Amino acid sequence: MMEFLETYNLLGLTIGVATFLIIGLFHPLVIKGEYYFGVGCWWVFALMGAVSIVASILIDNLFYATLLAVWGASSLWSIGELFHQRRRVEKGWFPANPKRKYNRSEK
Image (cartoon, rainbow, N blue to C red; front, top):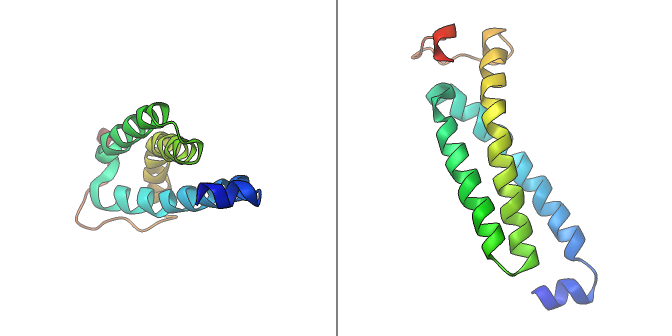
């Protein structure tokens, strides 16, 4: 597959499309994560980000190393987005989970 992508100069395009899809995947993950678990699930994103970044350093293949780095960066970025999502829920922009109380002590 790598030879095909490199032969037809599609490696950059493929990485770009995959990056777009990875970032797009994290949007609903943040929304659902905050809805069901609150901001307390931040450690899952931190662990996923750290593991992905370390794996991207250890892998020799440029394509997979790049995608792992994008996954890791998106995971780490999502930690901040969880806290922003909580504020969006408090403002009424997104539905709150009726089974959970939203309060400022969750910081």
